[in-house]
Length: 453
Image (cartoon, rainbow, N blue to C red; front, side, top):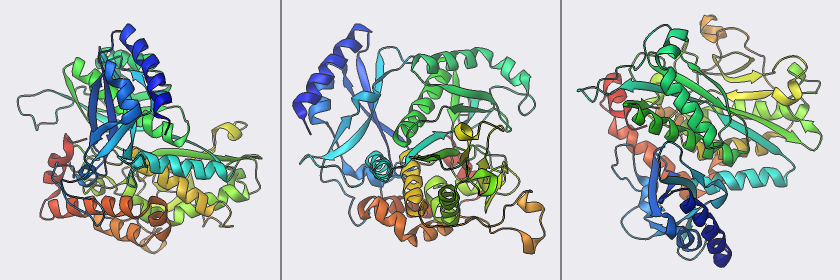
């Protein structure tokens, strides 16, 4: 770590921020509960933060969604310290928060070594390993959220806009908020590809342009906090929780990804199903085979399994299909003639409780494991899996968090990729949340989770 160089770069950035009226920089990381945590520094302190870091206890790796604290074999307790180092390349002026800028951090030890359980570092390491193997991954997270009114009953999830699912009258009712949101994201350099009302009451969805895995996770954090900040300016509140109201369609955070090698796109131009190359088919087959383990990372909350149910477009089955939104792995070919640029896979078992860096890193790891394994996809499911006779339905993905945890524990490849410290801390948090909701019904789980994400 070249501290002098980091300080010099940060001084230039701090001067530019000060000239724009920025007085403080929010430094964020996402913990194993999927909560975005923050420390901030005055703009003038940015050079010190870049060179020497900002202190933060490692115990945050075992914080749960209700702010209770568990422990793990490698991490836990009140002792020790880490240093938060902002990524100056991602420094962004926050257009919805006058006087503020933002940067994601990576966490280092006091001895100047990368923290073994840093989720962003995990994503970066997996991306770099893919690059070393000649692979380029592109990713983008969809963002779905509930937009609600502020009410006297803080627990009352009253939607901000009413009307039919996907209805234009919802957009009319929220046109001022929507215009403000899109303008704010554009001012921050976020390329929005689609924005529209979704199925559930008060639900909206936004899609952004694909980028590299770490940048995609960064964008997910920035977009969600921007959505929240713009809503606050309009006197509204936001929930990204897997379900807002038990029994309704929940909020997904689906991941789209594609892979290229030196010869081009792996998901187009080949002789396999829907023009998949042999390596591309092996990637999708490998990801599909390990979807149950990936559920613990992408759908990591107790509430996640109130969303991951049939016939709610959550993809609760371990199967694949072209444009099949009930399949756990949806293959998107794009419009005819555009496959080289558009073909991608959508991972459906991801929601707003997930840490996007862990999801991005885990998918990179699965791609690396499978790209040259010569795997082949099983038969495609081209209909709603729930419409098939019981004996013909594909396997269900885990139906509970304990089941998903068990599948992840048995996945030696993901354990090795994450490393023991991160793997154990993540599982400790998820087991603690299972215990937290052991006697809770769906309505209680939804209410307890609703405003945490």
